[in-house]
Amino acid sequence: MNGPVKRFEPRQPLFLVPWPVLVLIGLLCTAYAAYRLAPLTLQQQLIVHYALIPAVYSGGAYGIHLHGLWFAVPFFSYQFIHGGLEHLGINCVWLLPFGSVVARRYGASLFFIFFLLCGALGALAHLVANWGSLEAVIGASGAISGLMGAAFRMMDPILPMLDARRDHRGLLPIYSRQIVLWSLLWIGINIFAGLTGMGAGPSVQLIAWQVHIGGYFAGLLLAGPFAWLADLNGEAPATR
Image 1: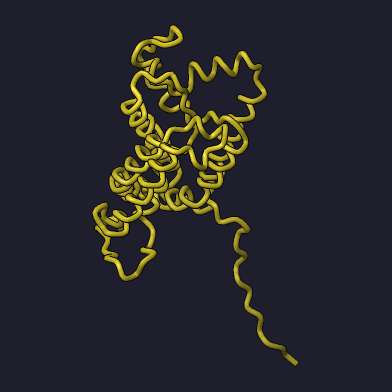
Image 2 (image 1 turned 60 degrees about the vertical axis):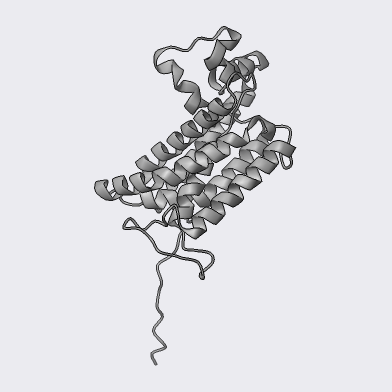
């Protein structure tokens, strides 16, 4: 006697994190391990040469004068230096949700470019706001803030009673009430944390709040052009 016909559903992957996000987390962890395993004197040299130090640009601090392409290197290299496991862990956890949204929309190559560019623009915001400072800035949180800004424009509205209209690229407009509310909240949190030091452990203090805000607004503004590039290139979303 025949029994009921069983329907076999395709197996879903255990983790739905796009592979570019996992690769990026792997790179951050590898860079941290290499940094921590280096001798103390080499660690200090890495900070001086590859962290973002505004005084290097304003007055050649530590005898460093950047020329040519080396002028731009710290804007990108600082993103891969972390002061401790707590600092690294917070950034990796933060990267998972927002990076996944952006990677699925843009595809792998544009995702990596977007990440680095938001981090560089966040560094630029810090440099302008802290011209002449000797404090070294490290970490990927400025770039991840940019991913968050872009992800907010891609997400469905949390509050359905608010205006949820989207532009032709499927993004929430920057002037929509959701984005304005999220942006004001993010600015307020960062200014409060920056002025009080609340929520910053001994390693996380190396990250300035201006980097977060600069990277976030870079993500908001660049989300549209990168969505246009992704549609133009027809790059397959990186879903696995």
